[in-house]
Length: 274
Image 1: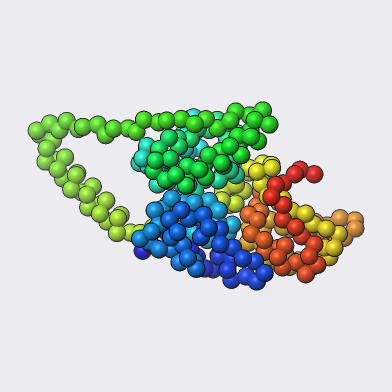
Image 2: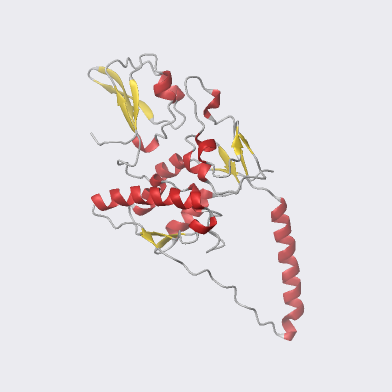
C-alpha cells in the first residue's frame, strides 16, 4: 500500500465549476499526478495534507493523535521522529491555522532545526506558516512560537542480570513478534484540519479564510448542501432567511462561490471580524 492515497469520494475533482490541484502543486517530489500518488517518489512529508481543503489525503500518520500528544506536553513542543519517535514522521502537514490552535492558549515551541537539511521544501513552508502565525500572535499581545533545537534522546543500554537473561530473551522475542505483527497491519488515517480546529474551539482571525456574501443572495441553500465542512448555515431574522459564514470551518475549497446561481459569494484570503 502506498504511503499516501487520495480518497476520491472526498476529493474536489468530482464537483463542477471548481478545480483543485493543490496537492499536486505543493508536492516537492512531484509524486502526485491525476490524483494518483507515486509511492516510489512520495517521501511522506505531509505537505499535501497541509493544503488539502477536504481532508482527502489518506496516510499512515495519525496526525490527530500527534497533535493531541503535543497539547499534553508542558511546554508544548512540536517535533518530528528524528527527535522523538512518537512525533510526526515530518512536520510538513502543519499549517498556520493548526499552529494557531496550539499557540492560542498555551506557549508553543517547534523544532525545525533538522528540516532544511532533511527537506528544504518543508523548511520553507514551515518558515512561512510560522511567520504568519507569529505576526497575529504578536498583534494580539500573545507569546510567539519559539524555535528550539531538541537533542534527540539516546536509548539507554540495559544491564541484564544473569538470572534475568532468559526472561529478557523471552520478552524481547515476544516484543519482536508484536512489532512484526503491527508492521503487517497497515493502518490508514484521514486528517481534516477543520475538524481539529472545531474540536479545539479555535478562535478565528486573519489567518482564516473569509467570505463576502452580496445582496444578490436569495438563500436558495445550494451552498449549504455543497459545503463539505458545513461552514455555512441559515440564519433567521426579521427580514427573512440569510446565509451565515463560520470562518473556523472554511477551507476555501470554492464549491460555494463556484456554484452559486446568483454569483453572490466571494472567497476572501483573510477573515475580518464584523
